[in-house]
Image (tube, rainbow, N blue to C red; front, top):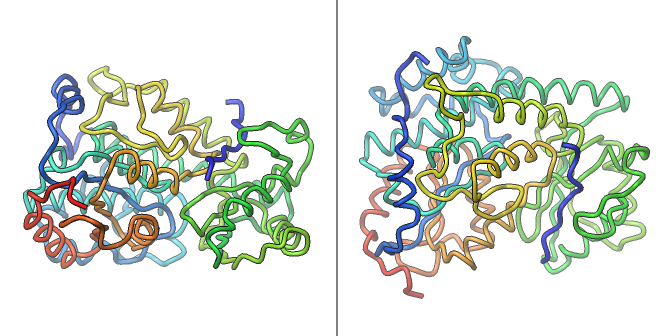
Length: 405
């Protein structure tokens, strides 16, 4: 399937989580031609919607020495008791965008720290690529040493606040609910036709085209494709009434009858309605310096990161800033990202780190859960038990030949 793009809009005091970066060493490691004996490996992180009250508790019980300092850092950096909300808040509190975004990102990074400190997992030596699904891109940036944990915490908290405000304003403007709806196809071969039909309805007749009426036509503003997640799933974002209108059109005139699932989100992520969030991200990424005067974004990182927007590895610091900001309003190209790593980079081992199993299942749909090589396939780490099982499995197959098919 050819990749579709939506039109581009105008565009620490505390316990250290990650030591200062040594760019020259990272660059040498990234550019090294030496090929590890193990299968090529990608580490990936989940996005919004996987939050659950109490999701840190099993990790705190099993690994208090590592988890407690991370929890203290979270609350110290944000200046609010986010870990209390995660542990014992109401579901409504945790689901609020300004809480769920830093909570999911922080929990994902915390699990990675457990792997590193309790199991001796050397991320920079055992991973070749990183990526994150939507919000998960922030955890991927921390894992790849592009962003410091505390900077990522502040950004996801403020980004969530801005996005929550955008959602409330959109609901007031359109006089109804806003949110996201997943479309699931039984016949995977019809995905390209479905996407073409949606773009045609929205007045976007070709990839990356710009419709002159986009600024004037409310329907175009109110519905867009937020995610292309897999060979049989996409997500629409915007005003629920207009999404329902689109679905009626697809069924009556397009011959499509996808299963529609309303997601647990009251925000129309990855749509033009989120432009204030994109503006915030651009201002933060381009104008903020770290305490030592260095750029808030380090480049290169420990290993390449694949962007949600381009579905390709980021090539420069400036490109990373641009793509991370645009991610707020543009389609998450998750399916293309996984296909690229699978087909072009020959990634054969996938390690999902963070709460929930959505990301693992989406990757598994494309590459197969068990994989084609010894030690390959998709591993998911959502609990201490899975961490132990996964690390034992990785260690046992570390010397597997990546070219074995």
